Length: 195
Image (cartoon, rainbow, N blue to C red; front, side, top):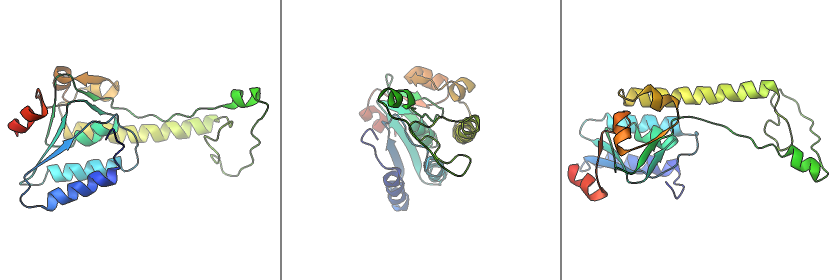
């Protein structure tokens, strides 16, 4: 996913593997800093349904990084295995806006905004957020984060509250200790030999 793989491609590949009767093990070879929210709840639920399918075992493996929304996806498999120096975590959600209002002012221009609707134009460069905008955005972030943490907790009952709350990254041993992974393998080859 460091090459920005579209979640639709992951979904399609999963469909193909689930339809192939001869495929018994499915591996998500994960290396992603995370990213978007859109379609993550649906794809995570699809991965969970696949993991719950009799006769198929889903694994997630990484020798690099499983972070944020990739943690959401990887947590839904039957077993998560990482190398000792790989990391997993960053469970959390954020939304950020950069307001270039001061820079615009220093360059001699400003935004003139005319709109209808309480939150219309929200995030437009040069437009300040109102308190109502801030509350609206925080409510959305909190809603998605609740979905994220609930999905991880349901799929990985041993995950610690710290891992769910603090958006930390954990390497191999700490990831096991915090309930984010099931085991450690020294390499891709060792992982394959285990499955």
